Length: 158
Image 1: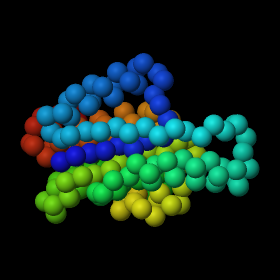
Image 2: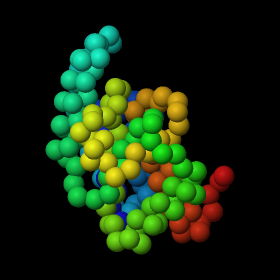
Image 3: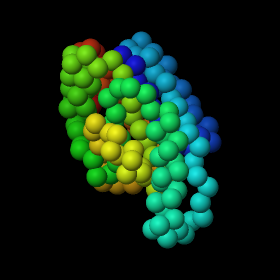
Image 4: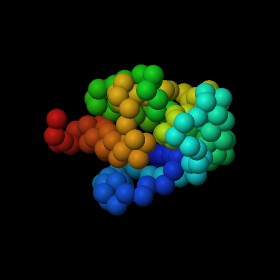
């Protein structure tokens, strides 16, 4: 299986990069992983709702230009939540259905554009809480790794 994570912005913090590299290394025995970064749109702290939509749409165009065929999962606060076992079941089910490529999409600080959300086969939420999109990349990779441990009946802390 191939998993692509399409995300807005670069990771500047060394500790996030190290965690991402560690999970990518662990996942290499289960999947082919690709992380695609698209540029974030520079924007001041205070934006009108119309300006926020412009930023999301520009970032969304960049995301859509990198989106390949596959099962598309958009990370969004309003999405469906899963326990780790349920998330593992989802990944296993998609594999059984013959889906060989899953794209996970992480938006920028303002979220994802409506156009990106329309392309999503699933909207996924990890929590109602707000997390920095850099940290979400680490959390997503950890949960994907945990899923493959579960799928393969391998021990992993609970």
